[in-house]
Length: 588
Image (cartoon, rainbow, N blue to C red):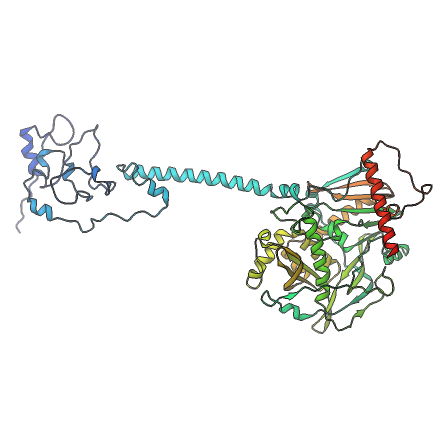
């Protein structure tokens, strides 16, 4: 077996420093040249000098002025072109004696410029900046830019979250700038309860007892369930009236109070306002009367509870002008008008009405009342405390051969620019998005409707979607759709806790039962999430003497106090107007 000899090349010794010896040393140049491959560039090395490059990927390919001049006709922008960077003349490619024609005909297969980056205007702007940097340095700049962008994003997130946390506070200050009732200086504030304490309350009540069912109901027309935005129906106007008297004026409640059936008396609308108080934004008020051991929750004539709030919990403020058709007051009147007519239009008009134990109280003979039933129910709050509430039902329907009670309500769209969702386009395909948007804009109203349906033990709550024919026409409306929900299921969807609702009522009742006999007012603060309880005179909110003045010797004189002349003039003028209105009514 024959082995070929392996020759080890001669390694020159450099006594002056690191690396191969300099070319000036003739004794070692020939040895170094024998060990080097032909046509390989070489750059001298020392600790103070930078390393050369095998392949330069950072060279600019589009700026001819930055290219080094070479005698070759080949493309000098190739990344493997070393002819311009040969440091040692002895080993440069230009003087190596190579064939110039072959060098001129040489082309790289992938010699075309790389595609332009598609990262937006910032990258296009900076593509010529620091073009000769090494890749590591460019990566560091990219990372620095990412860190700056992350800081900016975090700062924007902080500002967004701060603004979002202050949205409701700013909304209350902008929309509910006025209290629902004028606080008089002689009123004495007894309690101030923030809404934050309401969220921690919880109370479980047993199943209520039905005491009486009054009135009559008509059947629901199921054809309205098939209404779509493309097949809408015009909202009609009805003359039937729904008599919603306050608690202390209800004849049935007076009778139950005399029979000592309960200690606390209220209506479902008043209880719903208390139960959903933490969701409210606008100001509202209740009148509380303590008579003996009885407690009556009433509403004033012209109270905000008689109307329906619109866009109460929305982030977009409504116009402040009262005469504007899109102001909070005008929309409240419009919503009340829509609900009253909607509840009558969706009924079967065949003249049949199911009557119950007694007729509607406080209705004179011959007066035509709407389809409505009052269910008087009693809850046990304590061993010695019971609550009786008058709950409303609007219609009946036969489901699985069983009679079911319904509540009828309607949401109204006045301008898609305010709501952000066009019902005519989204109701048919995205009902969930429309309902979610209404929960955002009218969360308090929907919560109160759900609470009233739960109090009345309704089997189904029908919600209609009514829109204006034109955004600037607030007299003509169309019904776009009608949806039905079970109250308990809907309460779970909107996060309405029944135990928390009754906890709020129980705490208010316990607080009021500790007060002495008299009249009090519970007012929702117009600018803060809290309620206040004021002690008011016994004749507060009694306007009989204004509408029909008594003789001067029978009038109760107010306490003497300094009043402005302008106030006296306004009082006299308002009295004269009231007298003239009363005379006109008598003449009519």
